[in-house]
Image 1 (cartoon, rainbow, N blue to C red):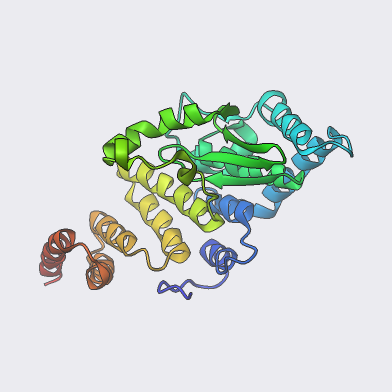
Image 2 (cartoon, rainbow, N blue to C red):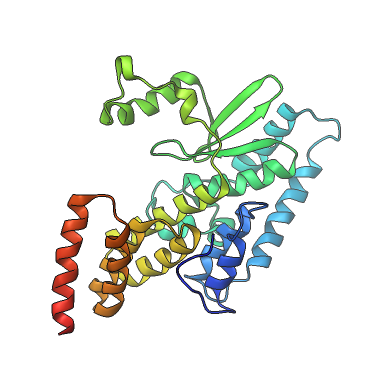
Length: 285
């Protein structure tokens, strides 16, 4: 689907657009790594991919040629979490660098979703049937083995039982009123997340970090990518328009808010944004 947001050629944004243009063969690691170019303009994404390839070669050497999937999983987890020391950045969880694959490779500290993207690349390189899980509140990974499914927390490397998952899920079910007879089975929350959804979650994490810091320029940069990734995500036009207004660029703000108003199906929010747009138009004179 063509994006409504046109990108000039030969820019990091154009490169990102070329990576995410098609769901067939979507290069998850490369798309995730390219996000770092906003913060690190000189970043060479191919170097990042090469560094990951070197990690894969190292862990492959530790696997016997006849190792079964469970043995390969154990070898990977020993290598990734213990030997290499990849772990969640507990002390600085909201540092935006935690979301960037190039920084993760250097610090070995990240958040669940960035750790998951790197771990999955290695797992798939070992022939494991690994995928990401958009679990509420905390991104997870899972591996399908001949004897069953293993669900893991990439933040700690911990394997999670059904009881662990149900306990983590309960606050979100309670918040949504999905309790007792309306309880949704845990298994329905363990569907494999498509790569496009994983990149969207990474970007939305960054968006919230920058919005909390009122760093509107970075908010806009993230939203530029989100709207290339999800051109029909009309609420992101709203948020970019409001960010442009915070930056004092009224024309850009009005243009984005007009797109949102034309497509919004939330009458209350739409009314509020119409009022905000009218205020901005008065500023234009």
